[in-house]
Length: 204
Length: 325
View 1: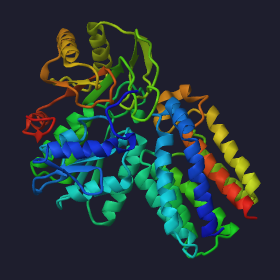
View 2: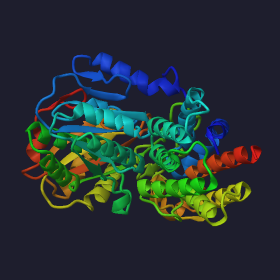
View 3: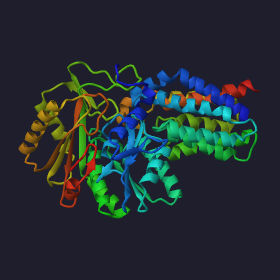
View 4: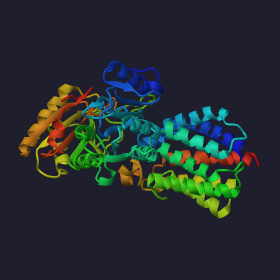
């Protein structure tokens, strides 16, 4: 994976977030305050606006760090620091490499998931976006970078949050009432991996 | 929903421009940020900052000034500001004696503030954070949200910092205050976010939502709207049950945005009567819109068990747009 592919991925992701922003906010109304779509859209539009300034010869790590800074600044809420931390950790794992090989990607995903857990003081199974990131990171470690497999792992991670009692974030206040609601951050994370897998499958 | 605005995405920025233009002798907006700071020169004291999502006006910008906050960080409506915004506020408030962050117990606020503190510490700025969790509607103390009681925390923190106390001392006093403040809210109508078509939850004409947060979150349960006296009894019983100690009470009756003062003061009468019936001593009472939820109609009750150490801080002089004493 190189900077050009990263740019393609982020462009598609911004479009998918834009198309689904109302759905994301609606999911958030059940568990939180109903602005996840608005916040993610604001963040990824800012990422999109930055992409023309990124040159193909720039290192992937530099782009990932730029994305982290933008998301931390523009998304706000809980999603800003969580997504920002994920991109910061991926950037750190990719430093010094012009092209990211599978081994680097596995490490980057693992460290991103660990970063989210640390920042959010969360564990898998608590009904958050971490359930998507940790499922994908584990799958990548076990079976390598199989893009079809990773996409279905992301979907499984997202769908699993529906049956969980939410333990972190505003949804946690609802306790048992949170069961039956899919986590909006898990859905946006699924879009992130779905578009990543699409980009990579398209360029194979 | 009809709103008086230009563009929902510009509302907070337009608000900050207007607020600092109107109160130009007292306040200014930091360039390229959503941070409001005091215009007066810095003094030798601990900086106190607060913030979070907007939509709670006059919190938090209304409490920037002598005796309360040095800076308010204003996120998008109901959305925690980013870590870079908190960092800008920390840098502005730092006068060499460190900065105390007053944060409400929401994951987003905590995480962004923590990231900003890490960045500030890397620059050599000493920071501490206190987390307000006064909302007894939530059973689990670890999950309790920060609501209107936060304003009283600002008052204590600001007054203590103004004495020149050290950062550890200010933190200690503020944590003591937090441990003695309890609140609970209810809504008669939901609120509606700028740019969002439907209200935050659906409520029938004859229903009230009990135990709401300040971001249009659903409450703990709903029931038929009752007369003010019964609502006063309900909130007093829920909040008083969680009070530590028997010192006199500071009482804060807070409108959620669309409840007129005539109803707030009528409700205050009922609350004071109920507290009197239960033999509580009253230290002081505050009524008005202190921590709102946009256009929500509703009320919150905060009770603060004030002792001899804390009372002077509550009464100390403050000169801010919303709080003057």
